[in-house]
Amino acid sequence: MQSNSSEDKPTKATNNLNAQLYYHGTKASLKQGDLIEPGYNSNYGMRKKAPYVYLTATLDAAVWGAELAVGEGAGRIYIVQPTGPIEDDPNLTDKKFPGNPTKSYRTKHALRVTGEVAEWQGHAPEQLQAMKDHLARLKEQGIEAIED
Image (cartoon, rainbow, N blue to C red; front, side, top):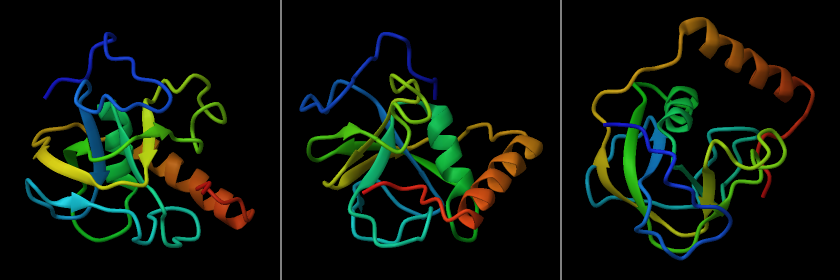
């Protein structure tokens, strides 16, 4: 699976959901046709019930999602299709990465699994540990990683 070209530039809320390839990184074992729905405990922050599901148009952001997801087993990256409008993820956009270069989005609607990225490269162990350490420091400081 190739990463997306620079031609794919969705921004802000969109209703043209078929114009872009989207990914969702997780440790859940899903199959084609399954729905990823809001309402489950988040993988981040206080792990409270998430009113959104998250998706990205970059393979790298999906890799982070798969690697940082809570749970046992290997991370997995699914190709997903939103079933409703999406919006920029405020947890990243204009807070950490102005202009949304990670192409990270969220939605209050389900994501339909349309495939899985079978082969992908994870981050270097030291890079992954640095991110986990950073998230642990935020948690110790009481900083919530997810904005509702």
